[in-house]
Image (tube, rainbow, N blue to C red; front, top):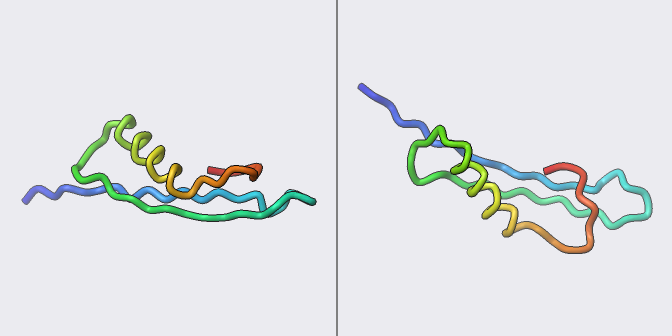
Length: 63
C-alpha cells in the first residue's frame, strides 16, 4: 500500500524582544493539495501564507 503524505507549513513572525518597537506575532498553516517534494511548491505556499498575516510597520525577526 502506497501512502501519500502532505506537508503542513507554519509561519511565525515576531518582534517581541525589540525595545521601543511595537510587538506583533502571528502564524498561518496551510496544506498543499497534492504530494510534492518540489521546493518551489513550498515556497509558493509560504508566500501565500505570509500575505495573510503580514502587517506593515513591524520589524520582523523570524519567519
